[in-house]
Length: 197
Image (cartoon, rainbow, N blue to C red; front, side, top):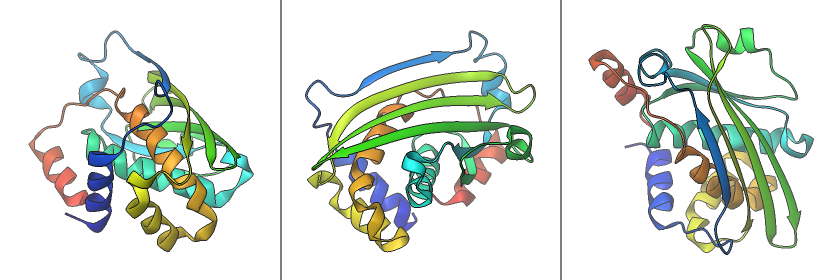
């Protein structure tokens, strides 16, 4: 198990949502997911767009968190992440079955960070959505249950991401819990293991 996997697994095991009733969530899944996309949309590119607060560092944080957490919690094979002000879906689809487009927002007021995520899983075959999700909530930047994760990403990306790590992770945790599961074959399972996240 990689260090990233261990840190995310430990944090996921102890993290609790501190925002009163928890986050507000909604999602939609294609009616034909089980018969069509589940076996055809496996290899993903995660695209963060637009950049939260126009900040490249925050975009990189969101991309890495999403890539690693989706790989751990779902059967998707997320092999690439990007963060940019806009997206060229054709380019993002090159070599992939789908693109998970995440549009996060984050507003800080003291220790509280209000986060929103609009998510869309696009099939590269026709650029149509297979799943959509939305999460919004408020979490403390200093959330103690994700201290190790915060330290890890500060070491990897720099001190500027520190107040965003906990709220981004907790919002992504709620989002990923709503995502569908693809169906993997034996070769896919081996590929998943080789990702090491």
